Length: 238
Ligand code: UDP
Image (tube, rainbow, N blue to C red):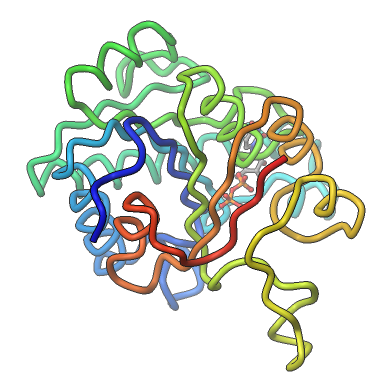
């Protein structure tokens, strides 16, 4: 394998990535696996920041559809990301990967508040930084938080680890003939409404020229392969 192509990356893990096939919550086997995958790039000396979603526990938009106030529901969703972040921190530290959580909604007794300069310092000292509670604002997603934090810390690439191999021109579960897209521009994603991230996240990434790699987290070694420049998954760029 080639040497690492990046020094600082932001990894986006959806909440669903932590639940495995159990349908809800956190799978202990899956979180151990994810921690091991992250350790493999940590051992390469990469600076790693992570944004974790909360969809395995609570999604604001789903609750608001049955009548709950959207802002309260989104606050619950953001707290779900804190739960996932604590689980991931525990799993990483069990594998001797020093980790700090910073939250966009302050919960001083549980984690540090989000302070950019402090986050950079942690990264420089070789600590993985998990950004929890999304952007801290309702009506946003953790994908948008991932793009935002990637810009703020000057990550060279956003790595979106998913359940599928990358991006298709239609849903591969419904359409057997769905075509795999290897290299795509942000403009194509917007024009064809390809389902990668929500539009806010896509436009923010496009405006700021942030490259995005999408790949399957379930195939062991994939995070390392992307870091080392192997041609897997889908790349999105300007
Ligand atoms: N959320 C929010 N603001 C943010 C990020 C997340 O309000 O900046 C809430 C929102 O309710 C969302 C939930 O947190 O549904 C979980 O995040 P997301 O759906 O992005 O998680 P994922 O799909 O990645 O598991």
